[in-house]
Image (cartoon, rainbow, N blue to C red):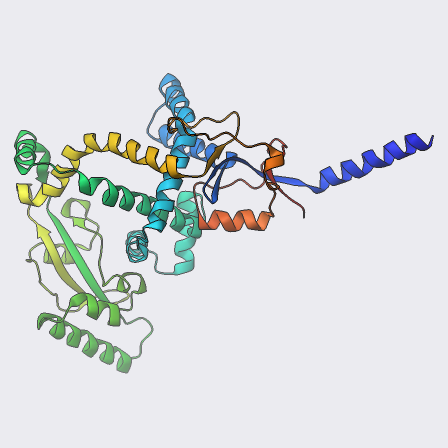
Length: 384
């Protein structure tokens, strides 16, 4: 009788302990000081499927694409993580570029309120603004590492570039396009006296810009459009065919030459000063104007083999462990990535808050914290 009661008590305690532990996520790979989780891999698969469906891919073509992605899913996650880590090791600075890109996105969204812009990002991407910014940071770091470590070391003779340009000349016919910077002096809610001060300020800024003061500095110090002021007033490029500007402003800037500074333009939110940073006429682009694009096209096919060679070297030098049942299709020959026995490892547990903190620092995909993972000694768990 006693033994039966004892066994029932032990079973009850075990059940209570099991109920007290919630599986947050399962670790499938360890890469230096970071981890990759099953949820991240599944999230990437979902994103690919959604994008494929948006492009009209269905049936067998969709199935084939998902099958290929499944085969390379872990490889792609490890690739990006290794490149991000390398970017940090190289001390690559990209904060200013991230700020500029986010400012451009905010200008395009036409949302000036920061909180509303964050909500817009979440609605458009399905992720928080912080995670979206981190994803953008990781992508840019990856591009910079590839550019600095691989692209910069690929040399293409100019004769070969010119031949490609001549053979593909019809692909370099350009639309009429203008690049602008702006200064906005707000007039919203101002009294007549305050409006007069704003008008004088705008007129003074125009005079200073026309005398040669750096427009980006004037914008950074004086513009009331916070989003663009941070980046010296830079706006995204405009094509005339897009018709994104008020017609009067469009007609004005597309008639001017590089360096033109407009008089203050009255708008519903304030006085707008525009500078034409660059303008391209419609028609055939010269080789010099598109040389960078031609170089990218010619060097591109030579890049992929070298990128894979570089990633193989990063794998060789990395601490890398992969759980049984998961395959790195980009594995380095001879590299031992076997998952060590549990007894040889520190307990693979952490709090939910620590997982979230790690996730914010290193975004590779949204971790679905509410999902259930198969319980195992190598699953991340937490106690409430």
